[in-house]
Image 1 (cartoon, helix red, strand yellow):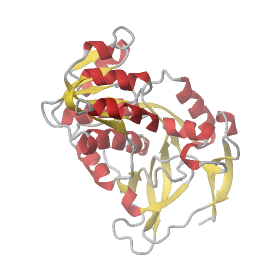
Image 2 (cartoon, helix red, strand yellow):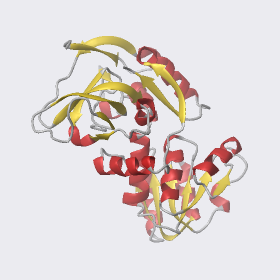
Image 3 (cartoon, helix red, strand yellow):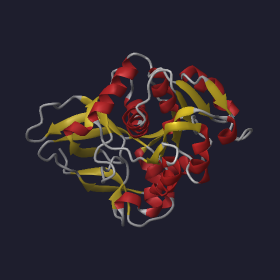
Length: 314
């Protein structure tokens, strides 16, 4: 096996043009790790925010990407969960560097799960970060139960459309916000009520919900408190600054604050169950070969694309 691999790197912060295909050293699996030959890598908003501002990775050089689906190439000392040839997927190491925009990724075995046979590698690579974000918000933080009313903002987005399906699988009454063009699709995914946020002020017409998933941030987070019943839960995704609403929320017994997704094998296994029973599927957008990562970022940042964007690697 070659000691090098192709990867998309950057040596300065900036626009998509800073992304370059290069030949770099191939990683080796350490103790408790597996080496995965990447077949597909998901593209997420945190990727282009990191490319431009550094975010969790700081100063370049670095290799972007956390969502990965592929085949186990080798296992490190002590690994019993997987063996070479197994198809796996996951969101390893987040928010530490994982380097998914590359032909190989080495990371802890327990940050992965077996890829569901029902999904292609591209579909599997679209799931981990957005799917785990939705599940951890709804299940771990919100403790959403059957019959509760759940409001999901930006429901047609990467996290949103998976959150709709997970909330529906929990038996919740799902209120989803999205442009009218996406309403039919969201109904098929399990949304019970749909609101076009360009036509109505959602925060003035929705009341008495038990849980709000807010991926919009800013003024919307504070305004969204009005939609919640006393004692409800609000999870904000964009930035830690949204914790400013905590004192105001606490006056009404509302649990509110920012949440950052974490690697979660248990969550991946739960997602697998939903996939296998037909209750969860990622909506797919365009795919790009690894060498066109810059084009993938341009497409994603421009917006208006339906479904998750992925890079095909192997």
